[in-house]
Image 1 (tube, rainbow, N blue to C red):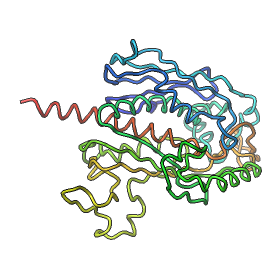
Image 2 (cartoon, one colour):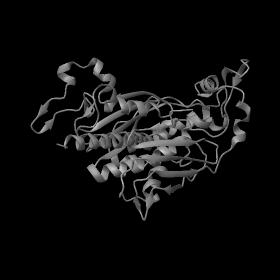
Image 3 (cartoon, rainbow, N blue to C red):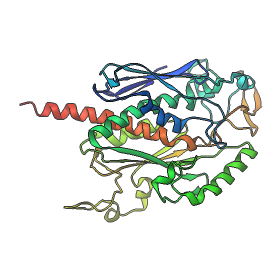
Image 4 (tube, rainbow, N blue to C red):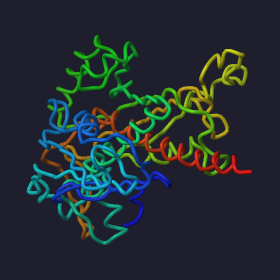
Length: 357
């Protein structure tokens, strides 16, 4: 199974399975001399961690990160950084009833068809559990970007199912389990999720990611465009079905006189482009929107087949997120940070070469 590495110069290889002994990643290309401790990484892991509210999976994982290499006396050495997170609350018996059957909307079917074998325990390699190492690596990328450029990357939920969440205040995002920027709407979100759990069903969400203080010049034309790489990595996040940069699909109904961001000596007058022009960062905030589908593991019975192509009804028991979007904000932040960090190193290499006479 290929496709487990993200990035070129700042490259992250992710490993493990949902119910294996551990998950983790190896980061190749982190510059030396960056102050780094496990506490720097743990903050974002705790934001993503399961079991933190009644609205997410009740799997109780401490998600304590261990730095195995690449750091000496509190600073990165420039060698590969290996991070390990041990799984401690697997309940593989919950999946015994679906070991030979496919869940509608899940990777079960396509993995079986492609590889001829699959790990049904928690989805194995297709589980959102594997986003924990991504968040850990992203925390390092965030720190590098902030130290070098002052870049700040944040995300919030703008929609839960049919409920639109008007943006009110960034400070509110950290005060509720939904990563919602509006305190007034929390009771409505809680009531909606409580009913959803009683129904045994799931729901989708929309996440907004914003990167501030991004340097100009990141990205290349055509196939190495910054927005193309952002869309690529975001689509690698479990359950993401659509990615929009800037105005996104709204540009369809906009005229050119409205969509094109006018420029003055003081700067841009709008940001419909989402901080990227022609595939290259413009210095404006980079804005990304993600559409996340409903979780496929639900208690509602649905029609499917077995590995022997026999028709059956499938009901998934166990502990699952009724909305994976609730915990997606720190993951989306990490993916954007990893992409920007990789492109910043590529731009530094290019600019350094251009300076050689």
